[in-house]
Amino acid sequence: MATVVISAYDVVNYPQGGGHFWVYLQYVLGLRLLGHDVYWLEAFRTKGREEQEAAALATFQARMQQYGLGGRCILYRTRSKEPLSEAPAEYLNVTRTEAEAVFGRADLLLNFHYAISPALLSFFRRTALVDIDPGLLQFWITSGQLHVARHDFYFSTAEGVGRCGDKIPSDHPRWMHIRPAICLERWPYAFDPSCQAFTTVSTWDSSDWVVSADETYENTKRVAFLEFAGLPQLTPQPLELALFLRTERDMRERRNLEDCGWRIRQACEVAGTPEMYQAYIQRSRGEFSCAKPSYIKLQTSWISDRTICYLASGKPVVVQHTGPSSFLPDGEGMFRFLTLQDAANALEVINSSYRRQSQAARQIAERHFDSKQVVTEVLTHALR
Image (cartoon, rainbow, N blue to C red; front, side, top):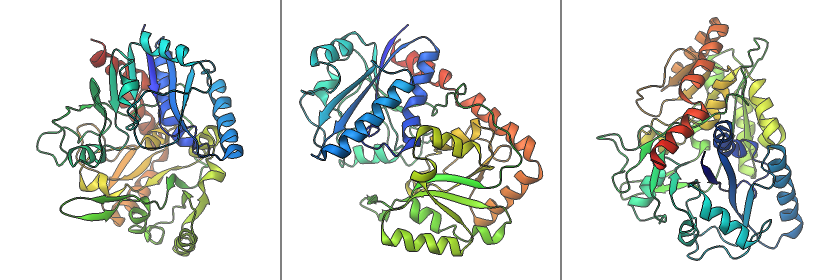
């Protein structure tokens, strides 16, 4: 069995992101179910806000303990989001000697953190980078907007990355496609025909813009959802968005969406912990969600890690089409829409055969996204 260090990003600093925690935990759980020895590595950014940072750290450590990672977590302190050239000098819960001993005996670093220090990477025998912004990461690298330290292997969770003739440059480095992971054992089938709303959990606004030689555009869920704001007027199906809302404009747009017939919840109130996030998904009837513009413009064929949680729970999904796929279905358990009417029609079909659609949703997760299969593929490539 292998020793694998998972390098996560922004979990400890984002305690209210219940779903964000699950992104990395799925890989940890898959590896552990196969008998591998797993450590969690993460940078803890500090800004001198002692009380707030202490609370975030305590929350994170409690979650590590809860999921069997007490004593298997290595945190190092940083004061910047920008990549540093030197190795971490200050560790919070282990000594530097202990941390570097783990790195030295690890078979693989599975890294999700783009700004990791090259000096830290050098402690590991093998390193693999996994993109969590597929399409965008490759664009940032090739356009010179982001420098990522060299890794031994590169994995993309989007089918469109590396596809011949596609819009995403991916030759240097060479990206291998893997599917995002879901631990089926922790996400059981939860069929319940009395569940009412199709939901999703999402950010809303941010400072994300894509700037290229050809165009500049806002790359947020806000612009994605506003394009489909009229959907409740085309369907009797209740639709609910759990959103991270912060500004006065966010609140105005919340009221506008509610006037259009949407139910709006504050995400931190319904999905602010890993347990709340899972419960919110499993008491939903299904998922309706839009994709950031970059996923569509770049034809990534991307599917969200959140959508896979709905599928595993037996919740049919109606999600925006992000490009052609060799394996994603369209019509049983999963519907990929291009227009408002596509989405309304999909909701009607699902409700006319809800049990069958729920079973199909679970089968999609079992067939394509089982975390044990995903991590086995990673290790097969990285440790051969």
